[in-house]
Image (tube, rainbow, N blue to C red; front, side):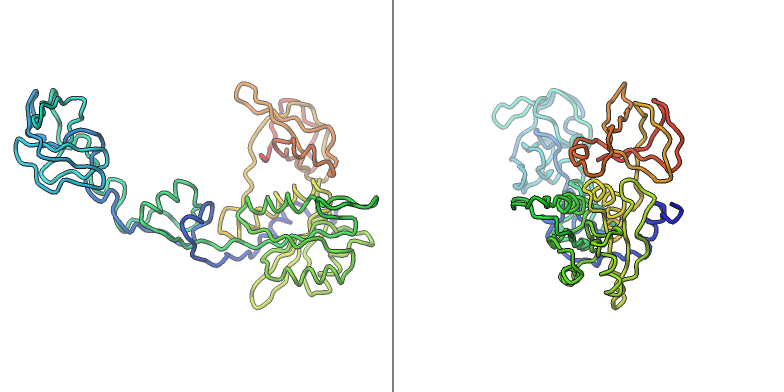
Length: 402
């Protein structure tokens, strides 16, 4: 198997020269999990005025340097309806959380320490200057660049962008990923397969992986086992940045993806990997007017296609978005003994059990790449390097969480 390419070299070739997606402007309400294409600066100061942090009374600290003391209430300041006058010596204003601090006041005395008798308010405790006041600009000031280019817009970032008064944001366009299932043996879910056919399942799992990684999945349906059908489907997928085929990339007489791509002028880089599951993975490129379209041929076996999509397709989508492409395996311990591995890097479906705060991993007995039931039950993929010697229970291992 010396002609099999390593996983790391295959990934390097796939990512080499990956271009950033162009920016597009979208509404803030549609920007969840999108990637910023430019930095975002505040259009206003937050809070824009000194505001009360508690319900109570706006006062001058000098008037309550000692307690008890009685002040005259001259009005009210509520959120959205501030007091328009000015507090003078011996006066106070009823105030509520978030309301603007009136002119002349510098502190807030909380209501728990106050007793009202008409407009006469007696305070039982002294107040220090600035107590329970959020000064203007406490959070940020107009012009502060608070969100950097490349930031994924999580809930905190979205709320911050809204507070900075941005109704729209410029984000990276989602990479369009066309998914083509191939094979006369396939029918869509809900159809009635013949005795020689099976239901196509890979498309839906791979599309979900694409969406979670930040791409836009385009389901191109099922191409028949003919070069004409495949070529026609490739034409329909020409708008995509990445074209993913499922099946048809092996070496059988009916595996026509490689032949069809080469006939269309694509340059193929590899089609066999030292990987389990996922040996028949293919990668090629097509350059048109300076734009590089990438073709990834994933295996037809369901588990193989899902594992390889995680390992190769996810980093490529992230590269197009300007995000880190490094896989970040977690560390765990083996719960069982494992024999030595051969020359293929292996991604084993496994479950996790927590013992005293430490993760222990048990790979399933069967790793057959057609068994979706085990993939659905798995918590993680345990990564075994090529030529790894036998490992005893308790040994450290690397896992990718699912």
